[in-house]
Length: 126
Image 1 (cartoon, helix red, strand yellow):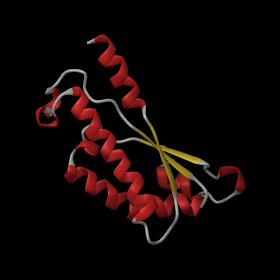
Image 2 (cartoon, one colour):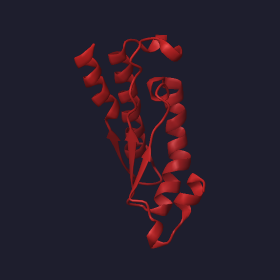
Image 3 (cartoon, helix red, strand yellow):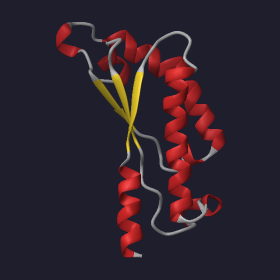
Image 4 (cartoon, helix red, strand yellow):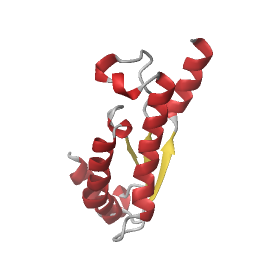
């Protein structure tokens, strides 16, 4: 089934309490793709999720920055620490737009700081 098919099921046995989402690592770190996803979240995902369960919570997985600086066309994102900070800021912007800029629905959103945990391991080992 598609995401839409899963989320549009309305019977009590198929309501989603949590919807876990993640993005490609570089997307939340870049302003242009960050803004694109903010718009998609507001226009498509928030209404779809709240139509299934108005009390659902979106959990954004904060992905880990690349361990090696500059790989996969990420030279402009800085060091691993700088890159991770940009990813974190992007995820926080998604939460902000859903909770404060969303005029049609109220939706709960949180971040699972997986990337920050990986950064601590990286910093302890490099």
